[in-house]
Length: 235
Image 1 (cartoon, rainbow, N blue to C red):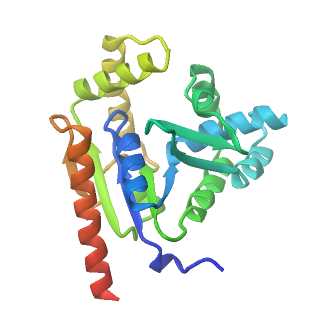
Image 2 (image 1 turned 180 degrees about the horizontal axis):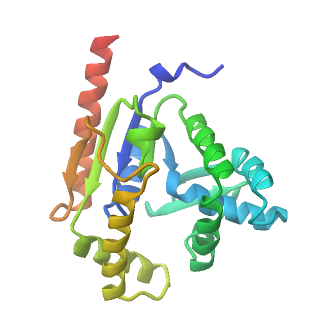
Image 3 (image 1 turned 120 degrees about the horizontal axis):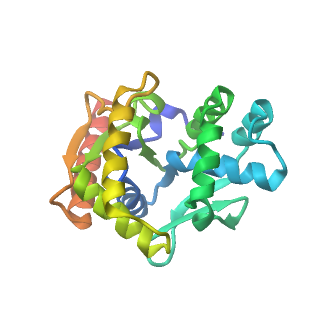
């Protein structure tokens, strides 16, 4: 039997693209020995699963059933980099391709799929705890999270990080275009009607522009442990 949600701690980490959420969340989850959820990858994983199981990308009901039952595991490889398993197979590279991104955008536009993935995200909440990486983890998916962090950085810094990440993975990238795209995406995300990108009122907001990975991880861990201690005092 699963533990009640209120006794399963959650660290909700939100923020725009390139703010370092993925790397920070992997490091924190590893140090805490907690489960990891990369919410942004779920639409890409649904698209990959659809191709694998012969489901059309415009078949909302079938896609929703597929999304609800995704067998996915998020973690890190031996070097600490991203690793995503779908039905036991490593699909890390596949889900980060441009083709997969385009297919994921079609999937994400289907309300039935979005609802199914909300339910799936809730099922990741298991002991000993969950580190949830996304854009609305602390405001919509886990509003009762034990600890909430909102990571941000200047558009220029985030573009540089994204450029480096793409080049290291063997993808073509243009730094100027990335900077423009990030600024435009920020504007869209802040103004969208459903789950706009914003920090929860009780979140720790960290500007990581001038911080290295170790500094951010340390600050997030300090905040998480302080919130856990406060939570224990309450109960």
